Length: 76
Image (cartoon, rainbow, N blue to C red; front, side, top):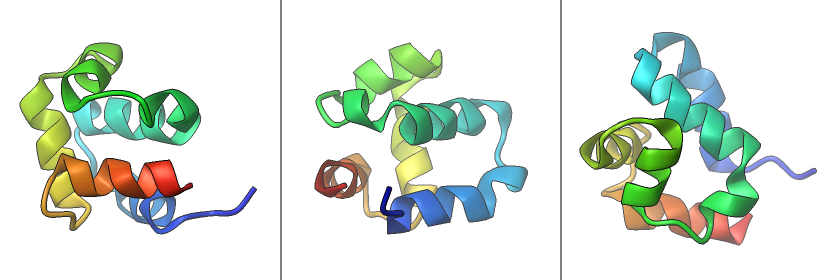
């Protein structure tokens, strides 16, 4: 399986993530096939975090917002 920038960014920062960020990271790493069709709110519900945390997670990885992160996940 080809690794992507978002996966590398998540793995590089994982040790410094809060528990909520780790739930989002785990979801995106393990269920990216599902995530490509989901909104930030849906990912938040699946990871049991607030929608705003999903958006901040994307920004923490260096994306302007969630749409840019999910676009890269979709490209994967």
